[in-house]
Image (cartoon, rainbow, N blue to C red; front, side, top):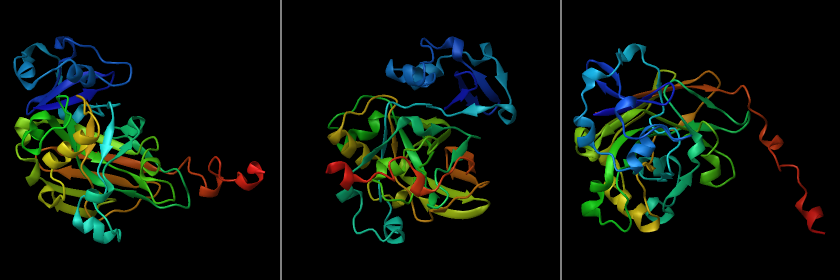
Length: 294
């Protein structure tokens, strides 16, 4: 089952016959910022609940004409995995992997959806695309063993972990507004099956940059959920970005990014540098800390 969001925070199910607006059939309403699916997940919504709905009662439109938004416009939190593919470790000349680095957090305000635009912050610092599989948590998880970790997964979607190559730590460099394109929808775990067998490809301006399979992950989805739950409680509606494979590269004004993950779908966004500034002009860059400490 594919769960989408339409303009106006309308909840929808995507089928082979079209996009069905089920907003009026849900027992919850869209939150002030989290969209329609976050409060539904927090209330304990299940695939069985959705399967019981009569879609013939719902307004429908063709997928080709539907304006989709981010399926979770503001997740509870975004947990991300650094260096979780060996080929990316080699590419970035990293000495460590997720096993040593652990996970980090991205600002949930960085999410955008299909057809939206990534805004480059700096004119003189490289900003890269990182195409990844994202996990959507469906049940509260704390100290979950690997063998039961996938029981806590509601579904999967695509995510672009946009990254500035500057001096700040990962959370800062990856948390600018618009730096987490998410979508095009959430595919429920029962439909995806084994998350460790999904082909992933990412193009920038028509150039294939990333081509891998989630079988190449260092921490599998189950291991990643188990590890993250040993650090922090995972709540329904939280998102885990599983890490990027090799092939990251610079974006420029006017670029287009296309991420395609097997059994999930295709996420496409644009890129703009219209508000970019020089890195030296960022807030705080001109402060003289030596003078301030005297």
